[in-house]
Image 1 (spheres, rainbow, N blue to C red):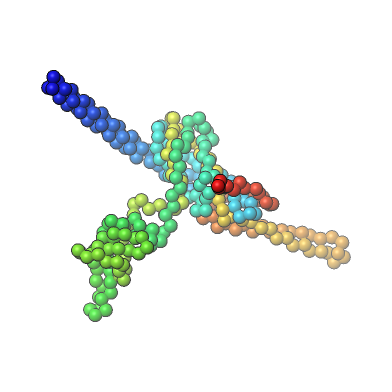
Image 2: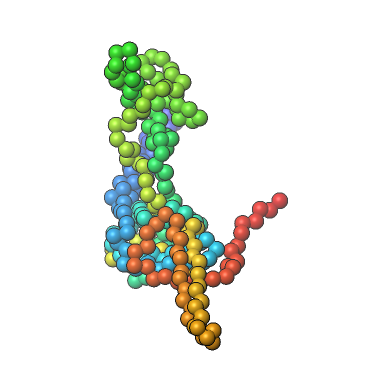
Length: 261
């Protein structure tokens, strides 16, 4: 009886082990499939862009691009969007095949290019520190492991821990996962391989316009010529090439977030 129970227990363990292996293989297969469908779209794919600017320092952007997507799930990096984009306002659709394409998940990624951001990517890795040796009139270089970059740097050099260092920090290269340009990252579902015309609309801040008018009277003060100039101030962090432009005056009501007590 005990031998039978032990046999069943070993058999159950083997079944659980096989099920775990199958699950891990399935997850690995899905990860590889998603990695294989990792695509990028930049401003070169743009076929049209519409910009509606409100004189309240924001605008509505409609960016239309031609993108060929394979069948199945994948990752699409939609690059060259405004750095002052309001990510919650993003809406993406396929103009040609709306029933085929859909966005399952969206992230907005943008790493500002500064020293702290670069050092954050190298925490736990080796970097080089160069210090000027004024006694020997030369540069001395040491290899250090960056342990932390939170409110100051902590390094491990040889077997000692340094709280900061006066030398110059030298990185071997730019981090691979650094996204230097504003990018929307989508996990998408595409039911069939198609060449989509994707329309992506979103609101962005830091774009504005104003109008100035000049009135010139004739010598008899009985008639006048009026002319006007429109000044567009684009500080949204994006370029809109050959854009179809609309200007809207007046106050536009925007729904503000409310916090319930």
